[in-house]
Amino acid sequence: MNVTLITGATGGLGKAFAKIYAKNGNNLILVSTSNDKLQILKDELSEFNVSIDYVTADLSEKSECEKVYSFVKEKGYFVNNLVNAAGFGDRCDFKDMDIDVQMKLIAVNCSALTYFTRVFIDDMLKNDTGRIINVGSLAGFVPGPYMCTYHASKAYVLNFGESVSHEIRKSKVRLLTLCPGPFISGFVARAKNDWTFKKIKPISAEKVAEYAYKQSLKGKRIAVVGFGNKLTAFAPRFFPRKFVARISAGTLKKRRLKQIKNPTIFVVGFFNAKLI
Image 1 (tube, helix red, strand yellow):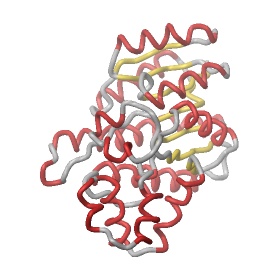
Image 2: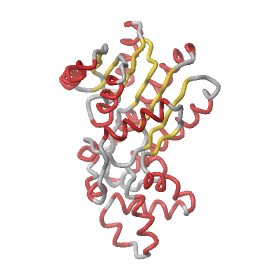
Image 3: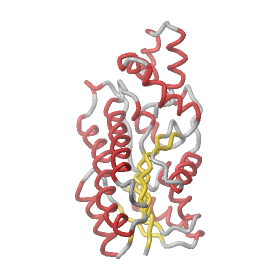
């Protein structure tokens, strides 16, 4: 049976993806850390008359990722759509960061995403069909002082996705790296990044997921949502990296903006406020 596997399925973007794929007739395997939330989501999606399975797993542990893969193989499922939506951020001065949290962030944002992409792409290539959506971020295009691990993890997702997309270009399998700006989810509270989100109006997770779904069907490699966000992704290539890091820092920590006097920097900084 063909299935769509979605990680981080019970919150924000993952949940939005689950609804879109179910609405379009896709059978689902939902992955999250909360068994109760998975059952609730399964009940919510029952109206779409598709098969829904779920696995409770902490994707910061490789053994838990392997458990998900074993579940899929034991059931005899073919994952023809994979959505790696699990991930989180953490805003803090690097010297004050909890190293255990940072290592878990890297494991979820990078390692788990890499693992699932690798193990499920084999069958996709064998059958010469499949779609993968890896959730990156605009943060992947620029350095991020005070959120350095998160920005670095999303730069990994972006470069990883572009590289794999090139390698599989002669097949009918396609990998999309989604790079959204701010959208409404539980990300802000966990990342402690309310300063950035106070300056802008985030869009809904549903709009982001719908855009990504359509771009994935078209076989696109990268999806940046919104004109202003496209400028954010494009503009940094014209400025020195040190300058970009300074602007990025101003969007992530309030006191940094007081050091910026040049009006031109404020203009660029406006676009870079949409980094998460």
